[in-house]
Amino acid sequence: MEKNWTPVTAAKGVEQALKIFDGKWKLVIMFHLFGGQVLRFSELEKAIPTITQKMLIQQLRQMEVDGVVRRIVHAQAPPKVEYALTDWGQALCPALDALLKWADLRENHDR
Amino acid sequence: MEKNWTPVTAAKGVEQALKIFDGKWKLVIMFHLFGGQVLRFSELEKAIPTITQKMLIQQLRQMEVDGVVRRIVHAQAPPKVEYALTDWGQALCPALDALLKWADLRENHDR
DNA sequence: CAAAAAACTTACTTTTTAGTATGTACCTTA
DNA sequence: TAAGGTACATACTAAAAAGTAAGTTTTTTG
Image (cartoon, rainbow over all chains, first blue to last red; front, side):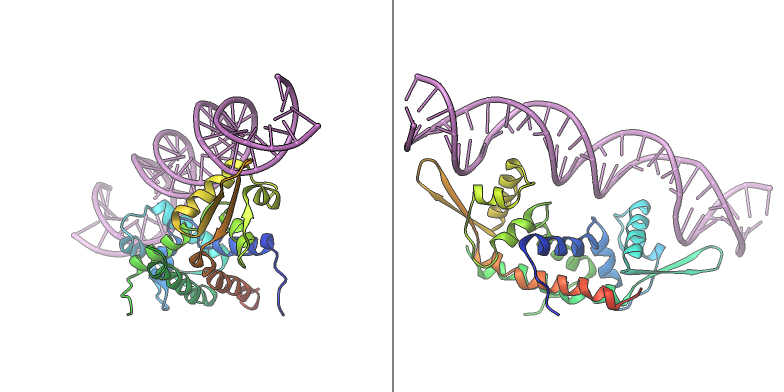
C-alpha cells in the first residue's frame, strides 16, 4: 500500500522517525548495541566516557519507551541491568547506512 | 573503498549528516523543493504559513552553506530570489525514504 | 560495622534553539 | 510624494535540551 505524501506530511513522517534517535547520545548508544550486543549500564558508561549517568539513563529510558531498546533486569545485588536493541532498533541500521552514503556523495559533488 | 567504522566514528558520521537537515524547518523546506522545484522566498513563506521570516531565512542560509540549497538572485526590483535544491540535496530523498520505511516497520513489530 | 559497587534520582545551572517584534533598502506605481 | 511589494536584518525574550553535582538504595566483602 503506497502512501500519499504531501511536503508537509512527508516532513512530519521523517521528523517522527528522527525524533526516535534525536538527542545528543542516542546514536552513540545505538551504534554500541548494533549487531546484537547486550551491555550493562556500567559498560555503556565506560564505552562512552564523556556521557553522564543522568544523560545515559535519560536517553536509554526514552529509547525503551520508543521501542528501540530493551531493558533486561537481573534480580541481583549489586544490581545488574542490561540493554539491547529490539528487532526494530536493529532494523534502523540500513537506513543509517543510506545516510552515511549520502554524506559521502558530497565529495564528488561540488568543489 | 570500505570505511572502518567504530561505534563512535559511525555515530559521528551520521550526526554530521543529520546536522544538515536538523532544525525545526529544514525538512519541510526540502520537501517543498524535492523534485526540482524552484521557489521564491515569498512562495516558501506562503507554502509554510507558520514559519517566520527569520526562521525561513536562517534555515535557508544554513542549507546554502551546507550545500543542499542553491540561491538564485535575479537582479530586479522588487527583489526576486529563488531557492532550489542542489543535486546533492535532491540525492537525500532515497535516504529519507529509507527512514520512512523503517518507521513503518514499527506496526508489524510489537503491540 | 565500615566501605564499596551498581544503577539510578533529584535539584539546579548553563547552553542552545526557536520565536516575537520591529526596522531597513530598494524600486515601482498611483 | 506617499504607499506598497520583496527580501531580508537585528535586538530581545522564551522555551527546550544538556550538563553539574550531589544524594539514595541494596547487598556484599573485609
